[in-house]
Length: 450
Image (cartoon, rainbow, N blue to C red; front, top):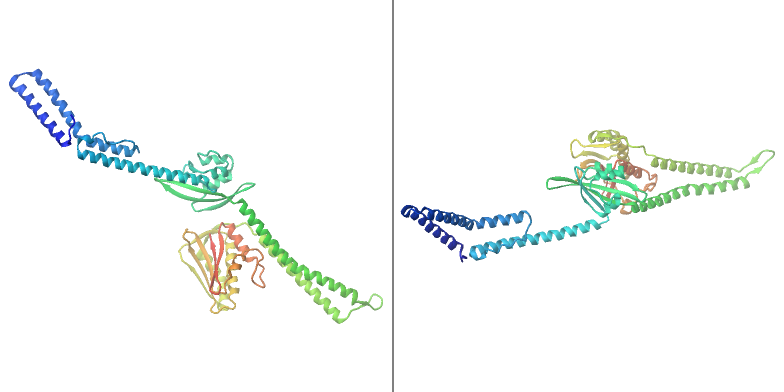
């Protein structure tokens, strides 16, 4: 029997149960018809079970709905008991709306996931993620190509074809960058980061082949170096060759024989000879100095790394230069903005870099009123140590800022153009950077990032 209202259905079932119970008592108490009473008792039990099932249909429906959410099964429809009343119809309608919303949300997430997966698979940067046990969670097509691994389930499999690359990927700390040569035509720039997902930690590695960029920069660097070498050598060789020809003409034309094994030369010609030879000597010494500078640039010793306390490093440099700065009227200040700063580096090489930068600032302040130099140590947003040399000198024009780190390029009349190039090379050996920021006639800041 189908009722139009759940409450009416419950009421009718309670009345029937009551009447059946009364009949059972009547048969037992007044007629002694025990067989009929047993039959009625069975009917009473059936009615109780049916009433229980009928009244718990809402709990079953909620349980079924929650299980469909738990197992992401939104194919279930809640409509079969709409005839039990308005309240059931509204409940079914609400359940169906929620299920439809979940289905729509899941479809959108799947579309977004497919979209992101397509993008990840087609980017030229290789992406590789793995957990603490080395199990690979994500690897795109570019990473498979760089690693020469069509299938990679665990990064330990990289050991089979590139031990150096495996060790670097395994040992890289979050935020660390590295450059690995993985083949004759492959130089991989590697960047590591760390992320947490559902309580698990994953390391994400980005791989990019910068072989063509390195080749281009290498060619450009050699062209710049060759241009400077040609300029310096021609500046020395051209006057030497010219003077040699002039001196030879003097020997032929102005030196005359005067008796046996005796030659005469005028005072003016002798003066020209002396001046020419002196010029040749000076230009030769300049060429030798240039060659020595080139040798210094190409023969930097391998760093001997050790733990350096920044306060001790600054104190030593201040002792070396503070008196000289005071005599020149330069206000020299050193600041350490974070306590107990330390770096791992070669102390002698880093001191050489800082002293070179401080002397450059000193020379730049020769014609500056109220000259001031600040040497500062701080931490950047990545929690890495940064040492800065700042002065209020004439600054560096933007065009020169792009070239001052090129070997032998200089804006000073007496400079060799080696100091800044050498300093940057030393920082690169420390896996760090040396950069400049300058505003003409306001300030210049050289920053060493470790």
